Length: 499
Image 1 (cartoon, one colour):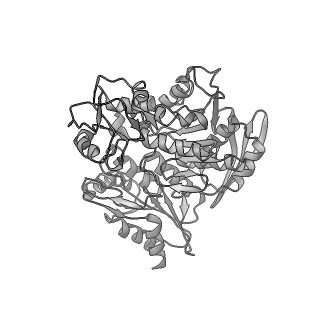
Image 2 (cartoon, helix red, strand yellow):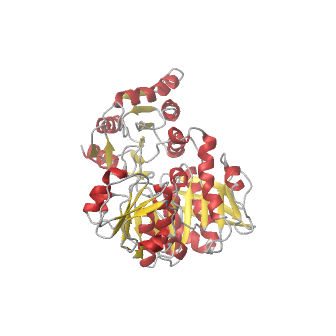
Image 3 (cartoon, rainbow, N blue to C red):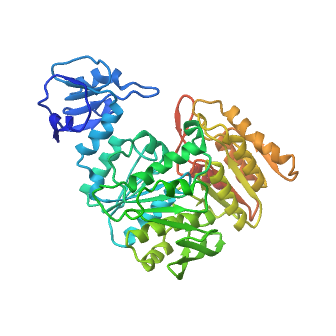
């Protein structure tokens, strides 16, 4: 609880109406969550304007409303007028919750692919070392072994600060957090002091928002400027960068003070601080050596694929900087298993392999298909599509990649959102057809209904084949034009396997 007068010292405001003698019990930008004593922030979004809900918030007992434009006045409510409600929210919310990120070690992972797996590996290693861990990301929020749902890769500033405050209250020592480019640009992590920042990779995605890869990279680089800022409350800062991938130099260049925040590099192909070599895969594990500080270490993990070697290296580098001994890291890695929806096996005793993966970018799809190629004994059957209302440029690219690596391709619907699913699959199929013209043995089909596509792929599978179902991974829903329905690729695959 804070007084309004305290809060006003932490936001730039133009004028107020009503009493300043108010106790504020909560902050929210969602009128449905307003309760007596709340401070309600009117955000102007692309589809909804929070100012339209100011009156409803007052009726539910809001003590204070923060607004950019005139809202209905009430003697029981104080209105604070500001130039930018989003900036006001970013500055006042961390203060309201007593800056919880300053009470814990904040380990951030950014990049197009690998964020979820890497944060979970980090969390597993730190838990193995005896720490109490929080995780925030695409799949869920974890506090210890308790799971809570999340709606964005990185929640908005109010939800994030509430989560962090709860973690601090429950004794969490380290938070492993996915940080998206949207969150960095839109200020969702303002007020969070990061201690440890990692960059996995940058491949084509979100160009509907960022427009160019250069702007996408600059958005990611904000994290490395933040972690290396002077005058922060905590010490022992570090940055961890995959130097095998494009835009690594952009991330490294964003670190403003390398004495305050050393840059640790990792790689497979180039010489680095932490370098993997002698990589061996089978269908359910990987082994490789890591060269670090003049010594070679043997790594065994149940994760499969070259892309997961990078994920492991990211987590190793981050945890070494947190003071975890290499021997403890290796022990923890040996009993870590897959994250839900990330190269997740679906096994009903069938004589072929079925894998569900979240891969929804060109690079992500290529990674899982390359891994399938390394472990296959038969054909690769790929089921995938592209989401609606998102970067359309990647659709034929995804089609080309799927057709290049797979023997059988089934193009289907993903989350079409407001677009016509038939239009989306046709745009993906353009890339498939380009490859098919040069690859006469390729078999491809367009099956718009995703359930039917999964059933078709499994019906086509022979002993030794690998069926890759890509795009939705852990998701348990499908977003259609007029509604969201329950849909889980893993459930659909199991149902098809059981007949």
